[in-house]
Amino acid sequence: MKTLIKDGTVVTASDTFLADVWIDGDKISALTHPSARATMPIGPDVRQIDASGKYVIPGGIDCHTHMSLPFGGTTASDDFHTGTVAAAHGGTTTIVDFAIQSKGSSMRAGLDAWFAKAEGQAAGDYGFHMIMTEANPQTLAEMSDMIREGVTSFKMFMAYPGVFLVDDQQIFRAMLRAGELGALITMHAEIGLPIDVLVERALSEGHTAPIYHALTRPEVAEATGTERAIALAEMAGVPVYLVHLSAQRALERVMEARDRGLPTFAETCPQYLFLSEDDLRGDPGDEWKGAGYVCTPPLRPKHHHNHLWRGLKNYDLQVVATDHCPFCIKGQKELGRGNFSKIPNGMPGVETRLHLLWEGVVDGRISINRFVEITSTAPAKIFGMYGKKGTLSPGADADVVVWDPKRSKVLGKDTLHMNVDYSPFEGRPVPASPSHVFSRGELIVENDLWVGKQKQGRGQFIRRSTFGL
Ligand code: URP
Ligand code: ZN
Ligand code: ZN
Image (tube, rainbow, N blue to C red):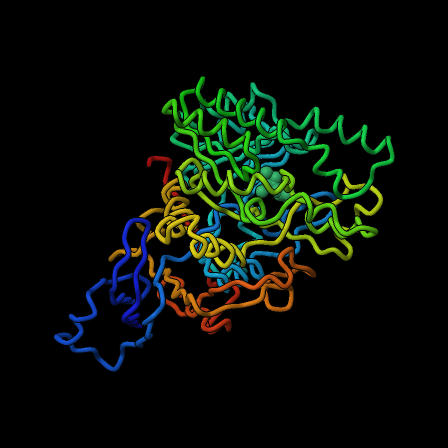
């Protein structure tokens, strides 16, 4: 199938220009100036999409999702099918999810378990990072097997003692091995041991409401973890990528490192740019309402927003991913009624990332090219997909979004497609939406409707290359 997306304004991370985008099969075949159409015969077999007055951008890449993640005695409510369908409706055509090497088990087993969740289910393309819960001789040796599989990044946690937490020596060993292999270590950088003591103390004092999730995970815990992760990476001579950075002081640690020329990279998430501790507080008389806003790191006071936006604008933060990890209020978040530490951590977000970040373009906080860079190009480069994904150029996968700056929408659980019974952004109007979403040349979403031939299982696994910007 051939497609011509005509008269749109093409936006890449570096350029904005009027162009026709030609798709042949699953690839972009050419970008030409619209005036060139006068001299080109266009056969009846070419589907034509009018993109005048709209932007044509590369499909979004969300490099931080948790489909069907088992967490806190329950499982994230979106699976690879529902989650990637929702992602596509919001203009995200590729996700990178986190497989888990469980304690006492192998990475191979973890990867197979995640393939089983995704294969035959995902509607959009997907890759995997591997969560390492142990860096022992077996798992360190397995890192090279993962790389051969195209799983080239690993997540380690300084938080969640007894579940995911690994000590500095293990982190350091994994970093050294990653350096040998060209892999990238990504870090959840909150120091979890003292956090657990604060949680214990809060509960013993009778503080059970959702807001205590934030009050027991202070900014300094993230800033210190960030500094430590950077120090370990510096000692190992390797790059490090901080996931879900939420706070000013953590950002300052990243800025200092980058100013010293260290290969330190960081992502933030829409929840840290748009929501705040006030949401987690709930309403007067209804503190429980905050449960839907429990994620880790926690939402911070509002003044952090400006720092994070500036970090994005000034290239100190490279990526906006979602950390999509939804749990329904009913039956899931409710596990923590009466004990905030039992509320499963995470929020829905995979569908709303581009809608929300566009507000940053409209407000002049980031340029339109930076919008494309932080939502698609930078994650493609950092996580070894660039060229195939992350830009609009001949030979690239035809993951293309026609972004209509006039297609406004009100976000809410009934207008979105994520499999969850609430939206943290309920009732929020957003000015723009995708009108057309192509994944590898196939038109899959048109004006908010799934129009692809197949949903379940059309997504392909993306084997990613090793790190090399
Ligand atoms: O609240 C969150 N972030 N849940 C997912 C687990 C993680 O740490 O990314
Ligand atoms: Zn994390
Ligand atoms: Zn996460």
